[in-house]
Every structure is written in C-alpha cells, then in structure tokens.
Length: 314
Image (cartoon, rainbow, N blue to C red; front, top):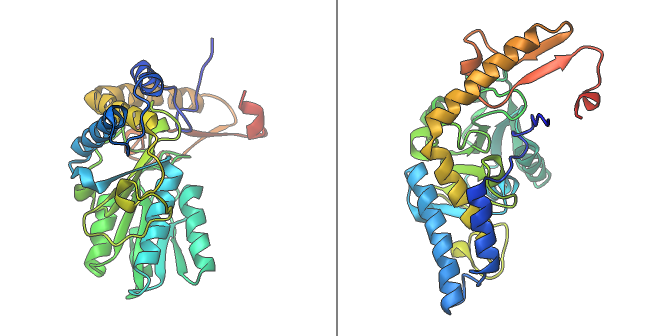
C-alpha cells in the first residue's frame, strides 16, 4: 500500500476536477476569445471560475488574474510591481525562507539595480517583525512574505506584518505567497492587508498548470507576458480553460469543507509528529512552544541523523 507524503509539493486531482477538465478538453474546447458558440461556452467557464474564487477571497472578479501556476503568479507580482513602481523607489524586501519562485525574482531584480533586503526568521521559521520593520526605508516599494512555509509549515503573521509595514510607509505594496495556505486557512486579501496574493491549483487537488494572482484594484503593476491582451492585458495568451475550470472547482470544494478538512489534517499531523519523536535519531523541526496547531496542518519536517534525505524518498 502506498503512503504518499508529498502533498505540499503536489496533490492528486480530485474526481470532480478530473471530470470537469476532461469535459472542457473534449467537448467545450473553444477559444474563450472567439465569439462563436464554442468560444462563448469556454468564456463561461473562465467567468464561473473567477466568480468562485472571488467569493472565497471576498474580492471583485476583476481583481483575479489567471496564470500558469504559483511560480508565474509570484513572478508577475514581484517583477511586475517592482517595475511599475520604480520611480517611487528601488528598495524591495522579502524573507530568508521564501520559495525559489519569490527568492529568484528578487535576485533577478537586484541584477537590474534594485536594492534587495532579506528579513531574518526565528528558530521556528517565523519572521522577525522588528528586524523586518528596521529594513523599511523611504525607498521601499514592495515587501513579500509567504503565509505558510512549504518546508517546515511555519505560519507567518502576515496580517500583523502588513499592518506594521504600511503604518511605517503607507504606499508600500505587500505581496503574500498564499500557495501553501489557500485551501487550508481563510484567505481574504483585504483582511490580510495584501495588495497582491499568489495561489497555485495543484496544491489543492486542482490541475497542474493552474493558478491565479489577486491584484488589488488600483495597484500599479506591469504585465510580464505580452501579446493578445487576454486577462485585461495582464496575462496575454489564450486562457487555459480546462485548468481554469479545474482550479475554480478545486477552490470551491476545498472551502466547502475547510474546517472539517483542517481538523482532520491537524489530527493526522499531531499523531505523525508524536510517532516521529519516539524514533531515536529523529529531530522534529519547526514546532514552536505553542504546539503543532501554531503551524500549518499539512506540512511537517523531521531530520534523521546519519541518513541522507535522498535515501528516505522512496
């Protein structure tokens, strides 16, 4: 019997999502930019998915931009916002524990003259708020902090951090990588103080190659893909309608049973962590004094003394 322990990397698509994606691929395969019947039907899937996601985020449908996944969403948010606001300053901030799809765009921008700062974290992977605020200057235009760390499950206090950052400099844009938190927690950008927020579909039983970026109305941001002007010019290229329909369905299903699913995951994690602690030579990482429930319910980390990680994979 297989024990799959890599859902933080990717999930199996749900039956409902798989059925819907197949239907769109085989039957409603029109180009959503076309004005004939097939195109209109395809556009309806795009609009329905946008509506499903907007209802969850409690935002306007126009604030959702579909992408190919979390990596593109993060790149669009960081590079697009930095380029659009460079006249206001050239300083951008992130943390030392971000995913490569955040970290690498910051390094890319550094090569183009932006000043980049990295905020430290504590031993449990939580951002040092005081140190972060000390990095903010009158030239800072963007701060990016993940909501849940993908390696150890650290929960970052993004709502508090966004508020503190904006109190120090009100026109700073705050980006949240919500790729590991969407579908596990309530994610409402306005409540979090997020101007930009990234999500990926294949972390929530949706299809690979699906994602979206929330862009708060009025946020200055440049596209990073140009062409046919789809997604109101923010993301050119024919929309991947099967993937878009799939991420809408997956999002709807995850939030229909959010609290039940989260409680189930926390119980599994508590049991798993307790068993790991019983094994000689195993160290559990990232669990603060407040306990397992002060971390994400679906990500756990353990180190095995004397054993190379690659040897544990299979």
